Length: 86
Image 1: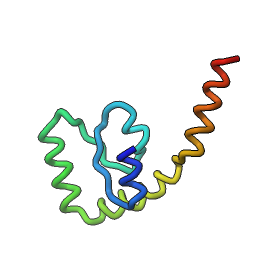
Image 2: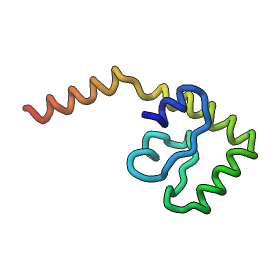
Image 3: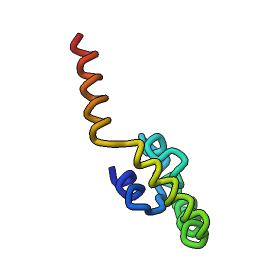
């Protein structure tokens, strides 16, 4: 949820390339290996110095966050439960 919250707030996002985060973020965030400190440092440096990248990630992130909603989450969870109970 923090990734989506940041995107919804119009912030550029740097996130882990692990677990479900790449799927949630799509192309609207900058993924990085959280165990690779050099890669993390380079990603932070690029994000800090590249205004065009920050702007693109902020714009793309805002659009990406709109794909997700509590209503959709509840509906899809309910449908999954219904499928399992039948």
